Image (cartoon, rainbow, N blue to C red; front, side, top):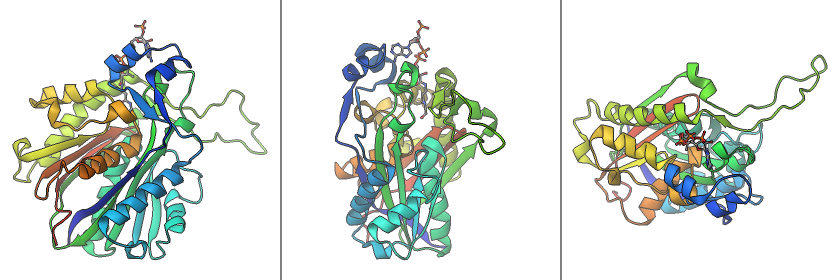
Length: 328
Ligand code: UT7
């Protein structure tokens, strides 16, 4: 079996910034509420770019940082709940756009846990040698599905994309993966597609495909599952939290992260956070934060890093990585 490691990262966000003050012009909200309840100060909102546009830009950066060419990639997985289309997959769109002619391409739907699921799937292929070099992307234009009249949700989300290149070989990287799902709690976070309507069934009046969320229940689930996922991903690895240099959580709410840190008995400072600048970008949030840390030289070869996510489905998961991007 091969080892699997991340050899490059990239990210991209729309240039348009929407501040909390901007939002207060649209719905009944204010900066003090959003900042104190969530930690979010601003988010990027697309003025026209779709999910595949953000994904392509993040992908090209990851490919450059990996020092490979698109022809080297033989697997592309895009994790998104806001694809441009039902068909083709966003992954096929990226393949066409970047010229990764050899790749097998598909999308994964696991909401905010998407990037963790994508790493999990790619790692299996790379370990067995069925594929050698995988491009994993988390990309969302959530502003397409946000209800801009609902202050409970519209203040939370933003648009963005992050990407990583994974490769199979002899250098260690992905040490452990833990993932889970619970479809009995699907109603807590929902974003409907098109309803059944055809020649027998007339179009439903008042149908909306906007995202809905039971914020309080998701909050409780999130705090607990971050703690559990971190404990599970470390189990039987020989490592403890003491050995971990960085934890990169899904960027949903600073209070969720503070709660999980308290439960784990560690400082919230050990969790990397950029949600003040981007809000919750669902599948993009973890790879976006990872790329930011890599570009700011916050992660050194040999560091143990945990990625941990949770989201609609419900879904959750964590990955323990030994960072060895630069090892030859
Ligand atoms: O990727 C995973 C997806 N989602 C999440 O992770 C979100 C998890 N949940 C949360 O982060 C929090 O539950 C929220 C940020 C969504 C809400 O925070 P909260 O502290 O649980 O507030 P709440 O829903 O209990 O609402 C408290 C009050 C309510 O007013 P009343 O009933 O006490 O008068 C809300 O109507 O705050 C009001 N409120 C707002 N006020 C100003 C709700 N949204 C807003 C708003 N601005 N944007």
